[in-house]
Length: 187
Image (cartoon, rainbow, N blue to C red; front, side, top):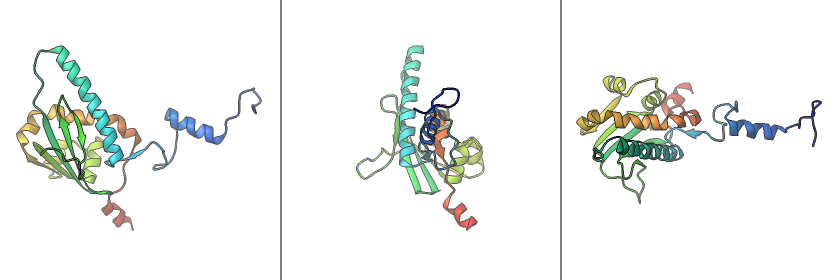
C-alpha cells in the first residue's frame, strides 16, 4: 500500500468519493448524489411511507403509555399534486394507529376513499416542503384547495402536521426538480 510522507495510506479518488457519500460530506452537484430522491417520486413516497409509519408507531406507543385514552378514529387524507415533473401525483395518507402510512394508487392497490382531500400544484408543494410557505398561507392564497370533511382537517391538524415532521429527515436527500412550466419559461 502506498503511503504519504507521514506514513498514512493514500486513498484513491473513488474511496474518497464513497467516504463522502457514506458520511454525508459529499459536495456533489445537485442531481449527482447517488442517495438523492426526486421529490414525490415513487421512491420518495416509499421512503416517506416508512418514515411516517415508524413515527406513527412510536407516537402511538407513547400516547398509550401516557394515558388510558383510546386511539383516535382512523383518518385518510388524499393528496393530489398537479404540474409535477412526473405529471399528476396522487397518494393517500392513513392516520391509523393499526395501519399508518402512505398508499400510492395502482391497478392492484386502491386506497379507501379519503375523508378529506388536499389539491395543490408542485411549486406550492415544494414551498411547503421546504418550509418557505405554510399550508395555512397557501390555503389563504388559493394555492391549496380542500375537499371532503374540512372540519376533520381542522380538528386533527396536529396529526396531519406530523407527516411533515416525519418526512423532514428525507429533505436533505431530496432533489426538487423544476416544474414543466418553469422549464418552458427558460427555453
